[in-house]
Image (cartoon, rainbow, N blue to C red; front, top):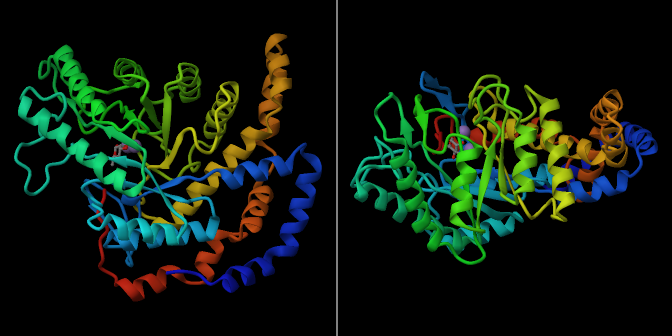
Length: 424
Ligand code: RM4
Ligand code: MN
Ligand code: MN
């Protein structure tokens, strides 16, 4: 599915007068709308190949129809998203859910849609059909060296796929841990995992990064071997300078101060990448910004401040990915909403009066500091986002255009009601 330029233009034409009023107003009251537009245009969020179909829970899965059943179709869907918002210019692949059997053809297809390949994701949390040894009791932590080696080999294979596609990072998320007290020797599990990660690290190409993702619980419910940012940071520090921590917003215990974690990881030069989603309870993988938009803004405020303090490029120096699951929404609509929420929080963070905030902090002006943050958060920057899209040739309202053009109905017509995408 691909839209014609004329379809986008017609949609934009219809909304232009109203948009212009909103944009003129907001660009008149904020200091640097042009600067924000420039940064938004550069900022791209990778779409995970495993999130283009309906997700599910262990109780059931309700397919919405028209789901992509091949990697090619998934890339087409991401291409469509990118056409609609010009902010989703990258793909993040999960192996073996999405093996690029003909890497050259896949790379060319992605390039046709102006898409790059972001971090590659390995999978040692499920047993595959023809797999020799089981991950039931873990992968890199396993008491059996053979299982650990199998997990290492898989990750090295994932790196190879990534090299063929032009990716430069590997994300490792482990389900390793234990479900009952006494099941595991914590120190041995940690040391086995470290040793396995070291073997992968030594196979990592020079220009690659490895991201160690942590998660508090699930599927194991008593302990997790990379359970929090402290453990991830331990691994990353021991591995070396190409190793970083990856923060997935849904992987903390309730009420964790994620913005503080982000700030300190940046300070330690160890924040590598991000998985965006939102949650009420645990790893809910809901639409970004749907539950705690203020928290998302506070996280971006720390990201912007921390990256600026170190002279990092916002768009390229960290890996930005969505990691969500769509159980009841149309996956493409859900992803459009997530990208919009990310861009909005980013723009709000760029608006923060950092000089004023610094002064307020130095003067212990607590109320003043809050005013500065909330002033940025409560300024409606949606017209600035829309203006950035308009200038980039995307849609003023991507979701509306998706509906106007009846894209899901067309996809169902093409692919059928019963297709099922690989992934969660
Ligand atoms: C995990 C974690 C990983 C993702 C898998 C599918 O909870 O978030 O990043 O690859 O789910
Ligand atoms: Mn994740
Ligand atoms: Mn997760």
